[in-house]
Image 1 (cartoon, helix red, strand yellow):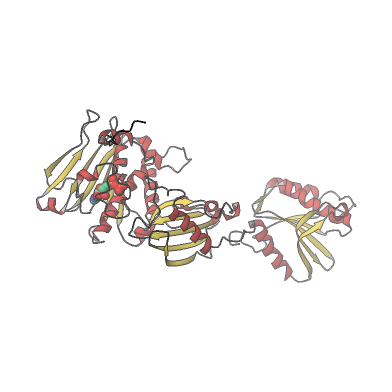
Image 2: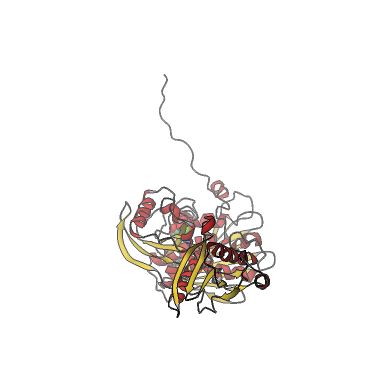
Length: 490
Ligand SMILES: Nc1ncnc2c1ncn2[C@@H]1O[C@H](COP(=O)(O)OP(=O)(O)O)[C@@H](O)[C@H]1O
Ligand SMILES: [Mg+2]
């Protein structure tokens, strides 16, 4: 066998080629904005900037009909080394665990590189401030692989503070439309979409904003809105909290802050801002920044059931050591599946967060309240849920509620929403079964939130005929409200 000396492979990246190949890897407009905001926040954290004066990100959006022109301007300390900052994969300038991949800025800008899209960076460091200048970097229109050009210009350009960074780009309406909620294809106005951006940023940076770590503003030309934290609407019992526990996910200490509980019933109207946390799951954040909402089944070995839809676990991983945190994907919309730190977090959740007992369906909870109310009514002898009827034929049919008094007995068919004609027939089955079993009912009651015209007409018609034993039917309609029960509060 012939062996030769080993030789290095010549694969130094040609930066513009790499750049062109990363185009459009951030798919949603909000992911692009977050790539910039993450860098600003990272800079604020690194230099522990004054929260009142130097921790602001202003997002300016203008629709000129053809394009949406965007500026993301921060009041940080500027980009210290523009060369490494614009080198794909280079982490030399990393300022906090938010600078994880050396890619965010490049990925985001690469989305605006082609065709008529364009972008520019204006940045001003403390040194530039002393010299009253700023650095402007622009993408040359042609040739496609030409190097980016930087030049110092006098003054502060677009900056809103003595130091900071302003990223400007224009994007297509198609790209801007990705602010619509997933699956919503209805056309939305520019202002409705900017409103969505405000809500989404309020959700992604909820804890960061709440702690006053930065101010985020969105100016769409009509209004300048300060982004407020968006938190889930918990049900009336509120969430359980596990405040700050230090734990090692495999590489070093991480502080875990966790809360969990049921969200309010989705029958109640959710404000649009609730959309991201409308359903249950495990919401995982790193230092307050939302990364991923994982389905419960993924953490609890597929053991969750549809009744857990309203169960939300929020966990915030706090650490300044990026190695200690589970790694994220390049768009920071998820973690690396299978990573040992993520698996250790799942194990911690399984050990410390109890899944709620399966919930009784709402209708059954209402019947339970009705049964309790009936039990204390004057003259009542017996109240039974799921009482058999049609025993004589062994049909296994159960009535929602059976109430016997001295000298009379009633059966209830219960409906959460609006009654339908079919429900009247179910009631008739209860009645006929009891009649044939030899313990005739004196009244059949259909209880619902409200009644359809059709169900009311059928009740009237039924009350004019007789059952198989020759006795006239006696059915009536009532509502939860008539019975003193508020269906929304149960
Ligand atoms: N707004 C900013 N202010 C200060 N420095 C910045 C800003 N944006 C980017 N940088 C610098 O550029 C580097 C690269 O950013 P980026 O491409 O987003 O990489 P990463 O994915 O690691 O965050 C950062 O580590 C930081 O040094
Ligand atoms: Mg970044």
